[in-house]
Image 1 (cartoon, each protein chain N blue to C red):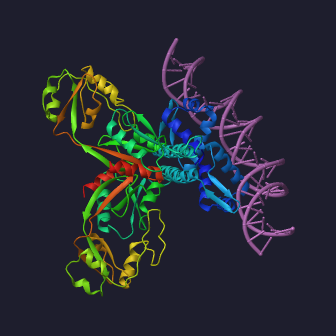
Image 2: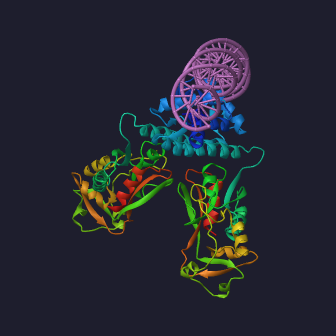
Image 3: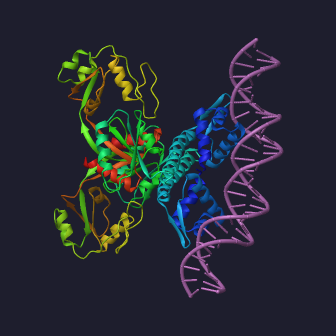
Length: 281
Length: 281
DNA sequence: GGCCACCCATACCTGCTGGGTATGTTTCCA
DNA sequence: TGGAAACATACCCAGCAGGTATGGGTGGCC
């Protein structure tokens, strides 16, 4: 199977419409129909059901969609990482991805310590939205990531634990509870009349329903400062205290572990040194 | 990048010789040279260094070799799993891979329990050599595996723990210690004059050196029965006692956890049911 | 109910490119 | 210094990807 065929199939499976998929791919519809037909013939059965008003996936099609996405990510990763390694104008570099606004202190220490290591290479920092680290590692846009368990998933990655900490409630500073020395989860369940928030789900999308889509922590802080939300975050978030918000420890909140993670087949010396530096902090 | 180009590059990178690689690929040498050149041009730099007596990999080439292998595994997995899902003659089925001779009792219970579930599908059991489960999951020859921590790795996989147990020494039945009620690791270090054994390393190869290459447990049991070896195995191995060997508990051996593992992007109902059945055993 | 619009498949043509053969260039070795 | 080994280059051909035109079937709408 060629990657082109996989890209074609994914386009059709996502659009559920040959003509739209063809437009997205920048080709005409007939070659696309033909390519999918050939794919179906080679794989031994139908992947799509053509109802004259569009297209639906068969069971086999659903299998191929999931597998093809993973395979295309791997191919993209190969291309991106190789292109970065060709010394294409610049010296070799690592790309580290982390949620914007999280673990700033840890990240600063890590970058300083690594830069002081002999033989260290340049590290580009890519600050992304919530839950985007995994995809960026998988498709090669990044080499290594800071993740926060249990919120993020380390599926498919190697990782080392760096820091485990408790959590604090982040409240509007006008809230009456900000003077309390501590809270419990049960207290927080009683906070009335704040609108629900929608966090990204594993696929990167947002569940349906009311409330704002939370894409990054800056946005979340702003909502809290406006009195429209509250949340629970790791203690280290206190270091990046924003205007208009206050924090109170939550005694019985689950602990959060910050980990450094990388694709399991990575074998570069630079990456190993960075991980080693991180675990020694 | 097309799959074909990746296969070509991997062939050259493994053979370190264009003509041999071309022969392996079943094409002539010139098209292969051309394909690699184009790949290098597109990726922005050399992947190979041509020393007139062969070829060596550049740093970028080493990166691409690792990434390309992972990507090709993913593409192969897509093809195999889809082909199995096309109902190509037979009903849908899951392929479960486990080390031959390990966890027989657990496996029997699992298969019986799963078969009794409503909506369960056929399960093909693939008994493989030591350490081959990971590759088989990665390239789609299997859907789900039984692994034994800490010997096997769950890198890149989702997993659920099934059973944690101590270990026993497996000795020739003629050995004087088989009458002892228990042993310690320190005792075993003193067993004299047994030849070393070579276990497969993570890549699937064997380290250099003397001694037999251990590929599966049947072979290992036979060596022990012949008085040529001993080993330490999980307690459940007692259930498949062979002729000429005896077991003695080892009190301070590390515990072994049997886990059920599957690729992290798998989302089929049949697989989820099988995992759920396994965790309820 | 018949017409139309929509959507995918088929037919056919064309140009690009993957692959083959022949040959060149460099280097190492005898 | 001649020759062998190994990768690159030149050139040709065939197959296939992609385009246009059109067919066929189905659902909706007047």
